[in-house]
Amino acid sequence: GGRAPRGSLSPDSSGSPRLRKPRYRVVLLGDPGVGKTSLVNLFAGVQERDPLDQHGGGCLWGELLQDHLGDISLPLHCLQVGNAYIIVYSITDRDSFESASELRIQLRRARQAEDIPIILVGNKTDLVRCREVSEEEGQACAAVFDCKFIETSAALQHNVDELFEGVVRQIRLRQGGKKS
Ligand code: GDP
Image (cartoon, rainbow, N blue to C red; front, side, top):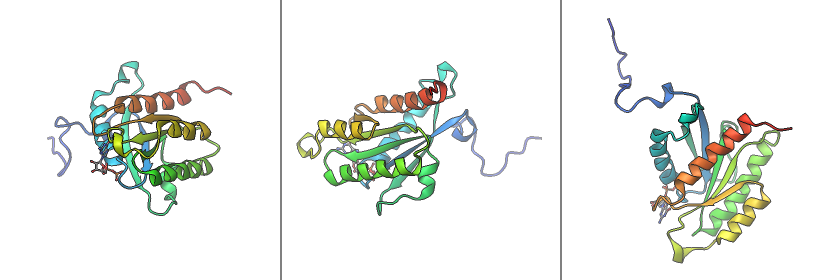
């Protein structure tokens, strides 16, 4: 007799991500309002598509943790659980850009022995006339901090796929092709 536990998810409705293949934790960091939630919502769409699963990697978007930046210090667990980090700022908000640099420094400090993928994201590129941070500044910052950089618009879904694929690529590069 198959008694389903009360409150369990129906496996065929949307599928329970927790029962699926190995997953990576991608942690989004950044000031409030920069677009983390919007990007997470788009991640959920990509998870369905699972573009890299055909390569047998079980490369699914797993838990996407958000961390709003209150003080400039992060809860320790946020710095420890991620397989990859996406540091988001808004190109319309210079303060959020400054915060991104702080976050990058903290991440490096917390996990300096590890080579963790970090991607710096300048979001809201659709708000052209409100831009406070140039693309060149973003690139320069990423170069200094030795991480990848991309500008996105969650609103227009511009470069969002590229961001996801870039994160996956970075994780897989480190897991599969360790060089010494
Ligand atoms: P969070 O606090 O970092 O999670 O930011 P949210 O995802 O909640 O976004 C904050 C506000 O910015 C919301 O009103 C979003 O609709 C808006 N927003 C997020 N991404 C974009 C974007 O790419 N372009 C524009 N124009 N608005 C955005």
